Image (cartoon, rainbow, N blue to C red):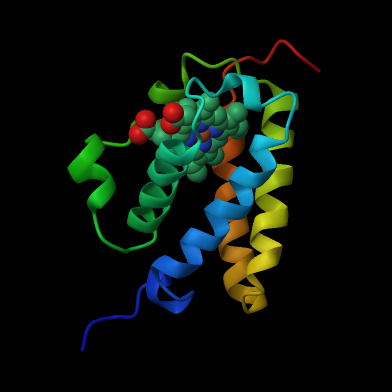
Length: 128
Ligand code: HEM
C-alpha cells in the first residue's frame, strides 16, 4: 500500500487542530505578537496555519487549493520579524508541540522543522 505519511503517523487532522488551537491560544494572549495579526478574529489565521502544516506533512493539499503556492517568506514580508518575535512564536509552538504528547522521535521531527522555519522567517536582523 501507500507509504504512511508523517501526517498519518501523528494522527492526521485532529492532531494539527490541537497543535494550532494551543498555539493560537498563546498568540491571543501575547502582547508582542497579537498586535501583528491584522484580523480581530484569529480563527481564519489559525485555519490557514493548520491547512499549511497538514499539507506540508503529507496531508490534503487544501492549503494550496485555497491560497496557492505557500511563499511563506513573501507572505510574512509585511510583518517585522526579529529575534524577539521569532523566539516568542517558537515559545508558543514549543508549548503546543509538548501538549500533543507525541512519540519523542515524531515530536523531534516536527520541532526541528518548526524551529528552522521560524529562523528562516526572520526578516529584520537589526535587533540583538
Ligand atoms: C501568517 C506571524 C512564523 C506560517 C502569518 C501572519 C502573521 C504571522 C502576523 C498573518 C496572519 C494571517 O494569516 O492573517 C508570524 C511570526 C512568525 C511566523 C511573528 C515568527 C517567526 C511562521 C512559520 C510558519 C508560519 C515558521 C510555518 C512553519 C504561516 C502561515 C500563514 C502565516 C501558513 C498564512 C499564510 C497565508 O496563506 O496567508 N504569520 N509567523 N509562520 N504564517 Fe506566520
